Amino acid sequence: MIYQEKTYWAAEGPVPEPAKGRKGFIRRLISAPLSNWQRRKTIAALHQLSDATLADLGMSRGQIPDVVDGLIASGLTAASLRDVVTPRDRADA
Image (cartoon, rainbow, N blue to C red; front, side, top):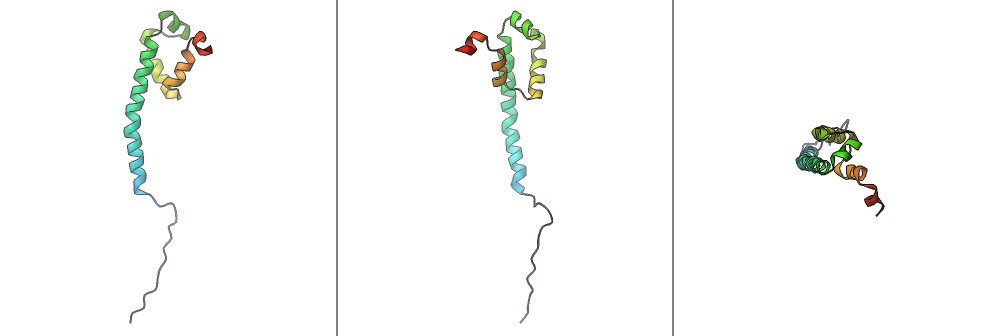
């Protein structure tokens, strides 16, 4: 009879999970179209404002895409931008 000694192996660090890469991939697949949709929606909302309101915000119509890209880069979304540009009489309602 052959005797085989049991060997217990222990990892020296975190063991990578194969599914972690897939979760990130799926998240990117979903977030890219969502981010693009939010960008388009924000640009459309700003285009609906009057020239006077845009001037009060410190921008012109030609600057809207650049301003939106800067807002997105800083972490603002269409929902938070809507809170910023909502007229005061509608905000109180």
